[in-house]
Image (cartoon, rainbow, N blue to C red; front, side):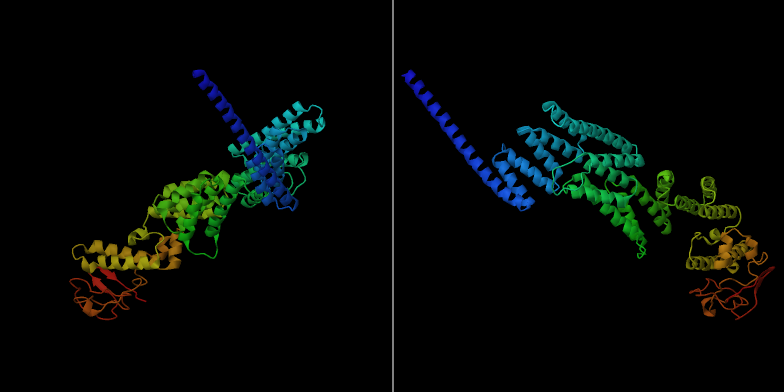
Length: 514
């Protein structure tokens, strides 16, 4: 009984295996038929030079029967015409694995050189030489030499780029591209000249890193014409578009919006994978733009970057601008000694630079003035204050320190009042202010020591009812804009119109209100 069961199971097993084999052979036959059908359709498209449609049908052929060498070979030719070089390398690699031939190996090696896989190309030519020692020996020897040299040069270029020696990298790549162009041949198709894509990419990369954005862009475009799907060239082309977009916003002469320019420069600075050259440009523009906006707390890091990288940036930007802007910040912070030293150090390297000379004179003047009377400090305004700010500060201080408001400390108030008037007389007159800023003798602007000899600067408008009692002698011409609300407590004597003065003991003030 048991023996019968074993026999039955054995027979069933044989039948199952036989059925599975038949099913597999049937499926294989069906797949092969489908593959042939797709191949015929693809061949028709190829003859009509409809390479994209042909490439799609050859792919279906390969999916149906991955052992069909003819479909790999034909798709390789399609991809050459479509400039899909990485895909072409892959297809030709399958061809030489499934059905190696000396011609296919030679073409694969040449294509590997074209896309920059020079070490792989060398191994392919060695394999061809080993499998087919009698095949076109002179040409194979030449190809071995080219691929070996190509591999060596690409490593050299990569080292130069790592060291940021872009000129050397570009020089090496120029020679390499010329050698490759004259040394490899591909099947006749719609392909462009046989540039090495890796070398083309690396030269574009080196040009971009060195700041030659237009030439670099031309290289990446050429790379993409050879292979539209090249990821590295696509990435760099996209980066160039972003760089140009921000640079155009920064340098647009028709735009007066400094804040928009600052935003563009900040965007440029923080672009992913932006080359060092353009990081330097972003810092340079931010250095100038923040100085223009008087945002002195943001100026120094950007200007200092430019100064620290002057050797790399000197051909692209005016480093003297960054030095002068740093000096402006120091002067604004009243660190005059540091500003002078910074500019003197810069002038030792660039002795004829007018910007540096002018800024040094300004810093030296500020240093000298800091040891004397500082009119800006007297009025409590910044060195770059507007006339409106100066006038506002003057009015406030003139009210605060008028001697009639300080009966107990009249002498102190009179001295303070004189200083305020003296400062305003100079700073309210653009010509006198410019001379003062240049460090010319301040006594020339002080009426031979009497700040009021030309009259009280600026004038006031007073109304009798605004002040309890008014001023003895009055103020001819008045204070511009008046003082609403008057002086608390008033001033004895009453307003008398156009009097000549206001006497308090030995003090005499002559005011001018014009």
